[in-house]
Image (tube, rainbow, N blue to C red):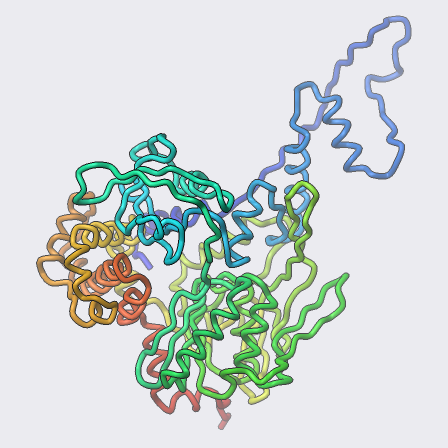
Length: 557
């Protein structure tokens, strides 16, 4: 972490928008003057009551406010704010989803959405296409990586401070509808105009699957959507055909999704009749989920990577693998979301997600982090303070020492807030350096890499494949010096020693992001992993006898 408080505050501000808190101000009327139409008969006091005919208190109060309040009120807005405040006082994960936001939140989990099929980022206030999705409508009509979208339906969207979320809303639309876009393409004098017919776009949850070496395969899942199990099984079968006998399953940054999909994936890793997870709630009877079938990867060495952003469904899999002594967990303590939400669709297209149970790992651990009902702000801010004020990883093995559980093999595992890894891997010291964090948080490494790849697209494409790029492209002195001039121009203050301390990490990130802009994740992850300490520890364990030794309990002398 940063060594000065100012930097910690800066880093906290990066995450602060993720926190939310609604403050309900209740006015207490201490003096009221009522005006009556006749002076002949005055009430005994200045307060009066209205009797409602039935016991639907909330509905009656809302109707009364709507019909009698001094100013005009939007009734639907009043209802939505009331629902949100009711849920706010339950737990941190019960939530209300307005109809306007429902599809945006649920489409990724369904593995699809409707639009023009591009990945883009806002660079210098312009929507730049990172990659047209293969087989999507944009690729079919000729949009290319590096194109800048300057107009949509003759309305300028470049250089006008339009947020990326609004660009998404403009470009998305129902299948079959059309949208006109105007783009700037480097090397072409005139702007290019395209009419794109929107279509259903697949949304993938598997970022990459590749062979690390002759025996070790790697799979990274970004979420658990409706298509994740099919994607995982296809990748698993493909890697096994390439000789995979040991696997690293990367769930870092995976914040969950459908619990039943997580159970299906766990079933691929565990023997039949192994308990995967169980749930229990006040109004929901205890329910157990067991591995039922012969999975595709039940006996071979397995390591799962997690971090503080791994949550919910990710923790189900990690907990099941750990508690059944099936494999090792490596990384940093996970988020700690052990509450089960049930979604109820409402008539106007909105939805309610209500917590109905807690889930427990096979040894009986509830991995839900502690919270106070109604104190959502403290719940989330404590998580971000953990990232900022602690050195993530170093304290993970002692935080919940009082909540010990024992696996069938006699290993000690910990409950009370997230999954504690079998092998904790703190962030490397150079990744905690203030200069490196400043470059990451301000997006300067990414921006330089994108611009470099864009200017040298044809030259980099001569490597032909991601593998060719990985093996032959290097961040030489010329490129690194260009980057240093770039950060100077952007007002970054640093000491020469700061650059030397993080030089190799910066070069690795630059190469990874340059590769991603041309060859996608097939170039990004293999390069990124060269400086990924948790990944390297996992490979080291799988290549040595330490893996087997770690699955055995320590004997007391």
